[in-house]
Length: 330
Image (cartoon, rainbow, N blue to C red; front, top):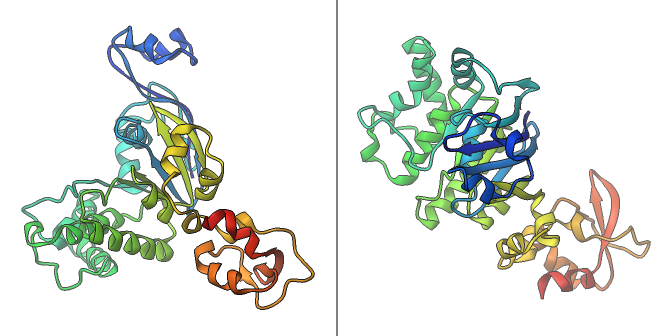
C-alpha cells in the first residue's frame, strides 16, 4: 500500500543532488560540515494493506520527519515514495491536495481541533473542505461520532471535553473521508496513563472493524508491542531494524534496539508460533492457537505433564512444552 524507496530528507541550504554529491554512505558529519541535518536517511519500508505499522524511536530519531515525508508535508530530498503503486514523489501541488483529501488522513498529538466548532462540525470539517453538501457531511459525521463512542456530545465544544474525548473527536474527523492510509503521530502521548490505555483498546477495536492501513508513531515500546503488526525502530534518521514485535525482542540487531526491549516481559510480546517446536506425537489435550500470546496459554502449558499441540486454522502445526516457557518466564 505504501513504500519508501531510498528515501532521504536533508534539512538546510542544499540542492536536491546533495545526497548524490556526498554519497549515500556519507557520515552525518559530512552533512553537518555543510550546515545540514539529516532527518531521514536512505529509508526503505514497505507497508502492506490492512496492517498497523509502528515507527518508533527516541526524540530526534527521525520518526515524525519520516511520516511527514510520507505525507509530503516535508518534501523528500531524494528517493521515491509510492502509494498504491503510484509514485507520488513528484505530484503537483494540485494533485497532492487531492491525494490528501481522499487517500490520506492524519491524527496529531495535540488533537488540532478547531475550538470555535462543535464536535459535529469538527468531524464534518474535512468533508466540507471537499465540497460535500452540509447534509451529507453531517450525516457522515454522525456515523463517525457514533463509531468512536461520542454519541450525545455532538453539540459540545472542544474545551467542554476531556483529553480522551478530544482525541476521539480527532480520530472521528480523520476517518470521515475513508482514507486509504491513516497516519497517527503519537496520538496518545499527551493523555494520562489510564486514558491512554483505554484509547489504545479503542484504537484496536476500530481497526478490527475498519481494517485500515495504519502508520503509527510512538516512542513507547509497550504501546508499539500492543498495537503493531510490524515495527520499525529509528535512530539518527535511519531505520536500524524492522520486523514483528517478537522478532525485535528475540533478535535485537543492535544495543540500541536491545535497550528498547530490555524491560518488556517477553511473555507479553511473543506468540506461541514463535517458540513452538515440531509436532510431537505425544502431545495431548485441546490444542492452543499458534497466534495466541504466550501469556494467554502459560498457565495451561505449565500445568500440563507433557507437550500440548499447537494449531493454526484447525491444523496441528507444532507443540509446546513447559520447558519451552522457562527461558521466557525467567
